[in-house]
Image (cartoon, rainbow, N blue to C red; front, side, top):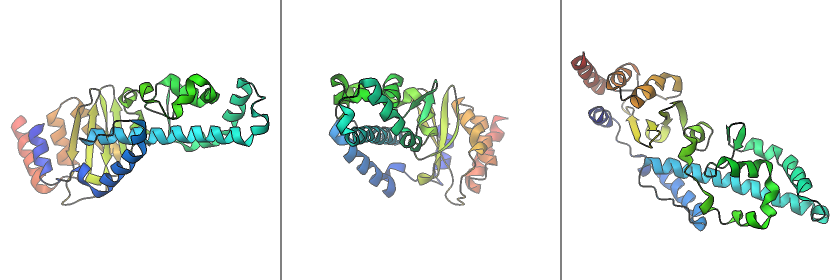
Length: 255
């Protein structure tokens, strides 16, 4: 597989983290998350994808909290006379439209708006938002690092639902794959967080907008089936002739 990746990289040497738009995006995300002591280190592409999930999850969290605070202010005259159940009912009904606009995915019918929180914490933000005014939960506005989980626990779901700006391709029990336009490459991440990048040729670059055409590639990479990966490269129409010829040569040697 490493030999194949070397072949493909000769016609596409774009480094994702060196792209101006990506560098600017990382800086913006770091500035927003820094006050909460969240690790924003981007040493590799996987770190960048994870940072995107953390950032979008934080934005969702902040919007839900701000909406709840706004509702309590609007109803200030009676808010303190309402019991917990009524506060929660008013807030939940008022936030329905906002929630539909946020990116989310579902786990066992529970909406996950904040992928760095577990399902239980997401349930509270979704269905029991009034807990934010209880003493034991009020600190969540600013102090939540100790409650965070690794978003990889949700596997491909954040990538499928807009937390990262990618074109999702496919997932199975072993991992998942997606396309990134900034460096015209397909990424496959397995369940152990191992990342394989398949750089598509820039010499005859054509827009990649049909993810179903790369399902077999994702499956082959996750199975470490080099022969099928080579075959995909030969047939995909996204590889330059020189690289394609080298792939054909290696395919013939495997017969």
